Image 1 (tube, rainbow, N blue to C red):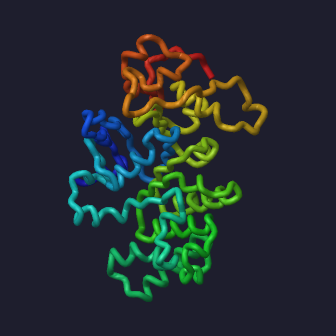
Image 2: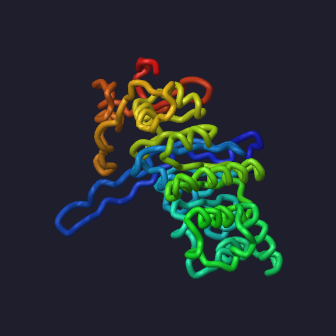
Image 3: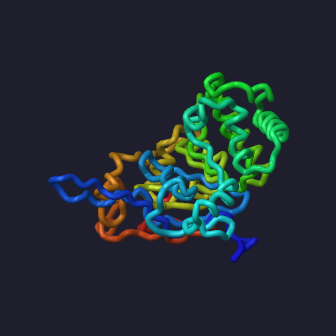
Length: 330
């Protein structure tokens, strides 16, 4: 069946990515590492969905699983009405150009043996149907759109600054006319002075091209400014999702509250008593029973140690995975 024109562009249902535990000669294999566990969400056309969580929460694993860069244990990933997990390599090649990725490290993501122009044109070459002169013209136009001169096409990645390399990475992602871009912490490796430029470039291209973005980040001030909705991951699961301002103004999960309170506050009117996040996340190899966050949660009760909370709706698309509905108001 084709896509519902009023439905989501990307629909992820009950997606899990488990890695087998190591086996040695003197012991049984360790239990599987549940990097992503039963995750469901959707991204609408032209929407920017932000994904946040501490290091090790499963954000990048989730992104790579969606793009079929990692094997999936179970679940479903539908893109534009097509189930991706059942496609063979030939069928996947026909749709992959519409789902592109921008990586965190702008140097490691570019082939150092290829010029900037060759890096950008690689996707066009794989698609075929364009003469060399047409590809060169397309590369020059893409460089212009990301704020670099056409002469940059002849230079190698090592000759550019980090911000310039990320612009090349963005141009490469845009070259094949995607409808969804997964941006995996695209500014975290850049200087603060460059981050705003790259974010504005991404936003301009998103608006001009009508792109949907899955934007992975850890800077909540960036997420708040940039994203339409926010999704919070903890130990491989979604603990909260909703419109960005609804989540920031009325976070329903203690983990989300702690992440928000840990972010720097520059405006005096926003300073308040903070719910600081204590301790480290448990190992996904030995996840606790019940709510995975209960060992760090100031609001935990006995039931939190026994019940794994599902996402429950609050209002207007806002949902939270917490059994406590009596948390103090923010």
